[in-house]
Length: 283
Image 1 (tube, rainbow, N blue to C red):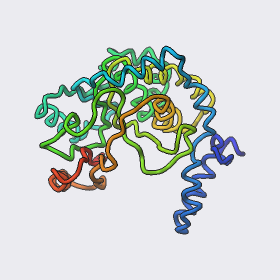
Image 2: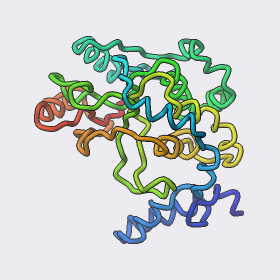
Image 3: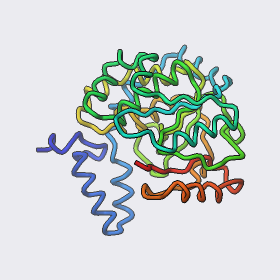
């Protein structure tokens, strides 16, 4: 019965049961239980950590990589049959305005980085787990090309400023989520929806190498555990990382918001914050 409710969390409960308890704590406005269930809604930290270990040479390479520039290219990935969202065109325009290249990767494009030679990517794509497949693809792209990776549910919050204006763009860069998690590498969960990096940073080859073992140990676990932010956090927190400002996400828009409404949000954010992203999922 417990197995049917998902892998056990760091609190020792089946994941789906703990998710229900978390929803109940939220509905009852119980902040202590809510924070506890959120914090422990991850697998036992040692499961991920044992697959992400660096040797001395890798640590030296990661330290040296902090001085390497992030290429001026914005990568986005869109797979599946749904139309490409309008956010992508907004980033294409932003890239043109600020002297970046913009690359939208579709299924066939990903052959160039060997995605179809990666068993985890292929399996997730065939299963229709597009978020997980996109997780894997972003690591392959950043490992081989470097640059800035952005999920398609971001919209640019600034027109007059861009990433190289407001961030330290050398070495590995990301931003922290608001909810603390028991990662085993500190309480901050790093989002993998924005990542900046020079090519060949060892974090990405280590993640790619770890994928099969983690997926085997956590079958049926959500992508954010096995391919997404949790794995990225454990891998990245073994080295120095540039964190974006706390207001990097300037605003959030509901999915039902119109493009004009989101543009108005961006206009209000212009020159008033160091935020560069508006969260919006218009599909």
